[in-house]
Length: 410
Ligand SMILES: Nc1ncnc2c1ncn2[C@@H]1O[C@H](COP(=O)(O)OP(=O)(O)O)[C@@H](O)[C@H]1O
Ligand SMILES: [Mg+2]
Figure 1 (cartoon, protein in one colour):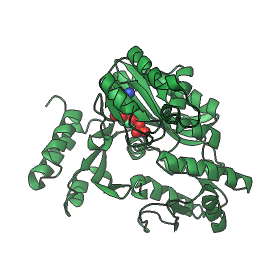
Figure 2 (figure 1 turned 90 degrees about the horizontal axis):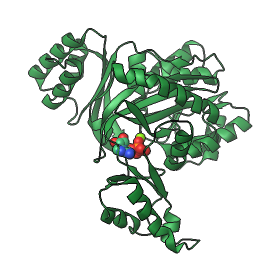
Figure 3 (figure 1 turned 60 degrees about the horizontal axis):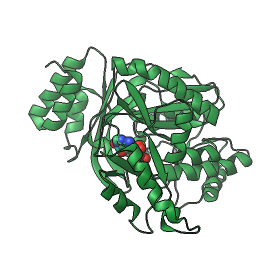
Figure 4 (figure 1 turned 90 degrees about the vertical axis):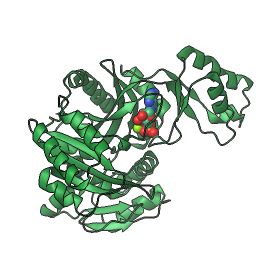
């Protein structure tokens, strides 16, 4: 993903460093980055850069300390290995150590860690692609084992590659026939977690810190979960008051922070959960920055990138729950924003960022994040309808969602 996804928090963090006389450098493997994207040294590395090459590039630039902000998980894994090389040459690197990163990029391992920590997880089982395909060790009964497990857990089930991100490869299995198709998909099948489908509200939480002090950012709501997996940015994302869930979350936050401490998480993790029936069910813990970072930072006034930079400098880091100070709302303008719309939008609401969303070179439209104080809901909804009536932006569909969220009684 391009660095724009971190707009405007990353720029702010780099400027704060500059104000303290510290030069920041960005090493990236995707997209282009200009002065607006990152005010500092910028270096594009090859997409397939190895951990050793990554560490060498950072060391050659003359870094005193480093921070990993890569996503998705395969890039976080590369950075965790690079961290080992960097730490070894005296360049302390803010990143969760490799052994723990390897557990957290693996959805099956993560499920065990969460369950043992006392967190709710979807019941499920692991399907190993090598054993299934008879690669290496022949285990003739292996193919039947998932069938038996599936009957125990019950349909519909969801099959998820243990290692992938951004919903890639996720399939709903509605029947034994679906499971059989999954089990016989051929040698290219990847190892999966197969688990019960949970219906509820998708929630994403970032935790930033190091053992002894973890800051838990406020929960961000990113859409609905059910038998049909959704690419979450297609829905409205938001961070704001939600009394019952906020109360239930306090306990979960403490457990998650405790788990991070036991594991030795260093830097940022992003936890994906489903809120259902008053409970938070943990889907995964990504050992990296998450997709809702901008949203939770905007709503809490906490800048994750500043926190990470402070940790790299060995400065004190404040733990505990970050207080939400306002609403933050994110929507996607699928057809792009018309040239004048951002300026018009800025006249009406506090726009945090409005930029193109590009994932793996594919454009997903424009992403817009704005904030409003609690108590400003009515005024904001009215101002946005005005803009919509004058320009057609935001679309009727987006406006309906914003109205339902901010002004449910209208
Ligand atoms: N057990 C589940 N029940 C319902 N929906 C799920 C379940 N697991 C995953 N999903 C859906 O798939 C999306 C991605 O799943 P997740 O476990 O976060 O993997 P990743 O983000 O790495 O692709 C979730 O945001 C949710 O929409
Ligand atoms: Mg996820």
